[in-house]
Image (cartoon, rainbow, N blue to C red; front, side, top):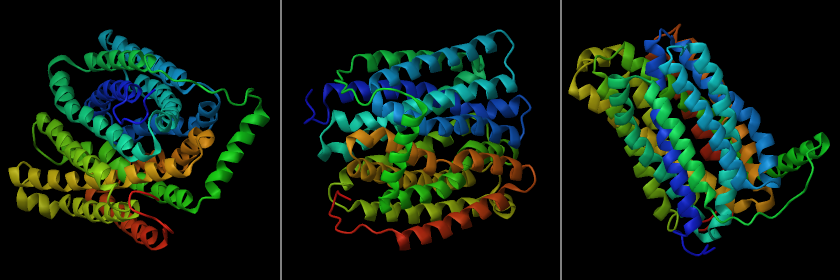
Length: 420
């Protein structure tokens, strides 16, 4: 296995499988809020949909990390993809049979969330084994970039197909994408080194304890995890709950504009991910991280102001000017998120021993993303009680305070450019 080249065969196979799978998942997940609204769902239902995907995933994360450090990560990825394919194809069958319902969507979403909970730590743990340490920043940037490219194709595909053919074919396409991803991952040449055997309760919890102790002993990882606990809780529901609700209830654009808006957002993420890879070779990761944090706080505050009734009334809720303004703001928000997540992942990978890699990432994921299902529920419930702009303004102020606290407390002693 030629780890020296960033374009080595194994990494290309991993990236190919991820992109195919991400394309199918993005097509399905992007359109689901609109599907739920069209099925009679409220903001609370949309929040529950996100909750039922995120909560099981986060519950599984710690145990998935232990498994990822003991078993063959390649097999874990393939198994997760195959089970996810069965679930997506089952949803397609329900849709074509006229039996698709909101409870069915919520229930099967739980299983998809669990499978991603197994898949993600195994993937992140495998990447450092496929490239040399010096190429980790570029490898993480490539993963993020290809995921965004898949997301860029998804909105137009999703809206066009949903309007013309219904949601069934979207589930079908997602199921096929999981199957293709599993096939691509199957060709990866991965020499698994057996770790500790046995899965008795005491050994599992001992592994979790050692992983937690590893994180507790690293101030940077600990601080960044808590930082994202608040950030993800306030940011993720904007795209999953608030934005589709704003589009459906306050704006008067055709459905195709929703797909275009999603493409614009992902272009922002693409710009951010493409910029971080080369920049990490020349600029300190802490500088990129702090710049992204400030930009994120500014753009979220701007989005909450744009959603105010006075702005909507002045510019018009169906005008080209308002559409361009909201797209530009969310473009900047998505770009800033990539300026944060890629440096954080690279920092953690560089500071973690390979034997702890999956465990650390699973626990970091549990801590940092633990607020996401709670945030989805909070947004869903509050958006049924208060105006959208008031909820967004409260969230943006909390994010601003968190960023200020984070920037003033995080330290990178002895850091050099491209390192942490």
